[in-house]
Image 1 (cartoon, rainbow, N blue to C red):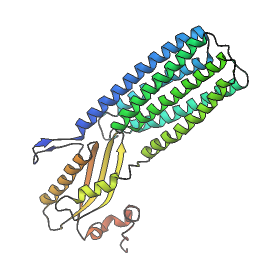
Image 2 (cartoon, rainbow, N blue to C red):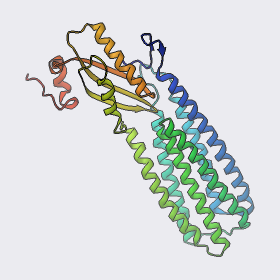
Image 3 (cartoon, helix red, strand yellow):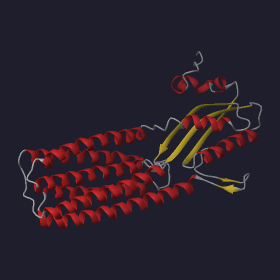
Image 4 (tube, rainbow, N blue to C red):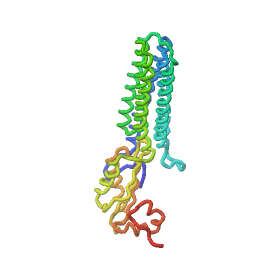
Length: 334
């Protein structure tokens, strides 16, 4: 019973995961392109100022922003791949491409932290470049702060609204580059005032901040990759399914994300004397209510068990899976 969508004739309306998925996809793509343009313009402005002032810190910051544009383009590729239809080889489709993109973004943030730390240590050891036109350099660094923070806020906001972990992670990545821009601004001011050590010290502090953000982002991406869902999701599924007329019990509920979409599996118990048509109607009602309760749902697989006979009904296969699937039921003696 796990179709991706359906038309509900009994309720006189159509509602599927398709409309919601298309809406969130469009919002994600819009956020990606707006962010890419914003970061690209920021980087171009910074490169122009680098040519005038020769700031190594600002040059590195501009390179970070170009890297962010490349990372954002990679995220767009992942979102595009996620739209591919399922087939016999990829029976769940390509939705997990978004989760893979999240892992790549975590690696990109780690690379940013490593590069920032390396540049700061080099500067601390005395490998400094003379900065000219401090005012313009400082202004360009502030543009980097503002540009990255605006992009970060926008990506994180949209990512949370459409439940896209990789888009939120990419927003956090932009925020780390905003911190790098802030470090560049501090270093430029320090050089302006004759305190050259301000640049590497600020850079090391920002490196620590990037690693702290990486801890938060990495945890969310790792949990999504391991099929974790919010603690309220499974209890809510039990509540919704258990409230359907004719359902006498709900067990073995599972849920996981495929990109931005939720896939659900559950067993529901019903009167064993029901006809196949009546049992199927109960399963459809479960799916119908879950689609309303979780607009981002992708598929719902409902298995109906005869109430009070679940163990006997699965006796043929239970000894193969029972100890792993349901720890509360003992396998039959052979």
